[in-house]
Length: 115
Length: 111
Image 1 (cartoon, rainbow over the protein chains, first blue to last red):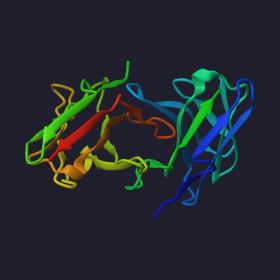
Image 2: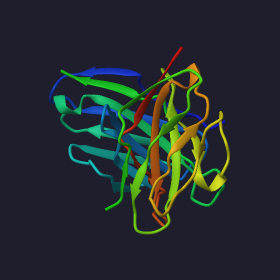
Image 3: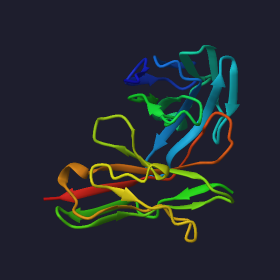
Image 4: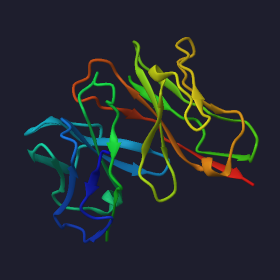
């Protein structure tokens, strides 16, 4: 059973702080993703990675960066947190396309509040 | 532009009634379509994908290329179907397998 874990379920930070959100998957998946989930806006892709040290911008990368030093771990970094980054953050992973089980598997989410 | 639209933010039905959650997409080509579901306090999970042509928990979805739609249907809604539903599109040949999600529809099934 695929397991995607996120370091925190709830996080409260202050404006201007540097914030790290960690995601770990245990299925040796090549692809990993970070989304933010907001009511009425659905899931919006922030960044994704299809291999170690590889990263691609998603639809809303501004104000975020990512790091993937190991295959199983994908970190989302808010360099200087702002109140408009208050949201639910979801991490996901998936195997390569065409493997038959190439859906995305999601973590439980981190609800970040920036004060 | 590649886009997924779910026109209803909230859909409320009574138990036993039919339910249809609408999904329309914009994509020049043959995409792969999915429905994901998020039950209260649970993680987002795959419900079904169009290439499987299967019924999961009584739900079905048919890809209509002419109308560019992938509506999710169930003939008799149950209270446990109450959840947030997201339609998603995966363009072909995109590195990393990224998905484009709709805005989501909250389904509320009343007793």
